[in-house]
Length: 222
Image (cartoon, rainbow, N blue to C red):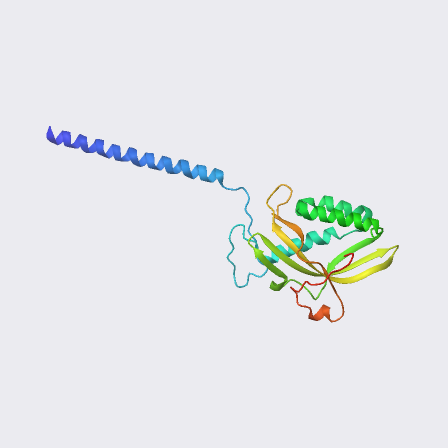
């Protein structure tokens, strides 16, 4: 009898141990499912342009090149008036509103009204990067993990009745910020936040020798 009782006690102890283990596994499974449910459906991983030496990137970490490319694309679209600025400039401000902060949108709308009063919108406009001024590390200044300043050296051409009325080179220091407000409207999670300093016109030797991050000076009627 003693041997039988001992065997039964051992069985009961083993069953209890298994029940405790099953309970622990069930709790762990519950937390795993809850964590999986709470995980974001979309994550952003920036891939640098040159992977020959490899790269390690964190989730939500933004590479300066991709920040620069985003800012240039949006800024170029904002300055693309293929028919006439009176219609095109206003249309671009509204169309790209997901990619600009409310503060910068207000600044652009005020710029539109000023240009309209000065009769500077009855023309076409095109902006393109100067071929000899592509992206380099020096062209993006990292303010913080959530804000950057990109320096664009561009050529601006405006025409009126097929005649070129403006053909200049300008450096625009554009501030870009993290803007994860509406992923349905803006998958980049970035937005233009205005000019870091006044844009500066490049003339003569400045086009070759100007320090990239020297943004003193102003361009009237940019």
